[in-house]
Length: 178
Image (cartoon, rainbow, N blue to C red; front, side, top):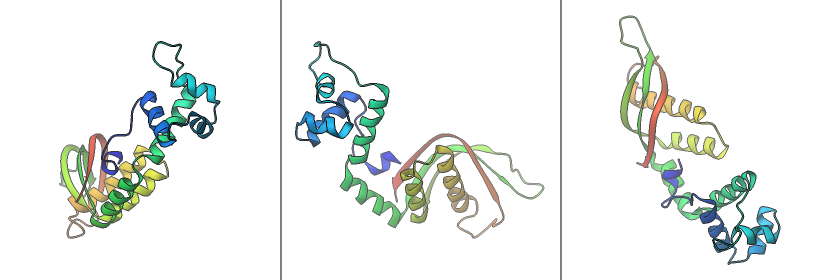
């Protein structure tokens, strides 16, 4: 979902993330320290020049720094792209194992399929709500499986209405705006 919402990747290393927090705080290490709940000296150690006894943030501080950066990264771009996805829908490109439960005599074994399917904006809305609520990958797979089954296997309600789709073993999923 993140690749859909942002035009640039969120900074990956703690050093880059601290640099971004400092830029947002207009260079004030005191403001960054207050935001992270640490002392000014701790932020000074984290941002010291290389080779000068530079400290590294602990595991819980790394998580906190990343959360703060992700929460504030490209807010206008995120809002604009999320609104566009909810209005026009998404294009989902995935390779995953799909199968279905159907009547006797059908080949219902799950098999690896490469799909590029446009899904409606309601699905995008549901995915965003789950993502913002901190849903697991499994919950996202359930939402996507239901949507892809409806669009791909049931052709948006025009056939195979009682078909139960199984979606799993996801190799990759890419999202784009429809």
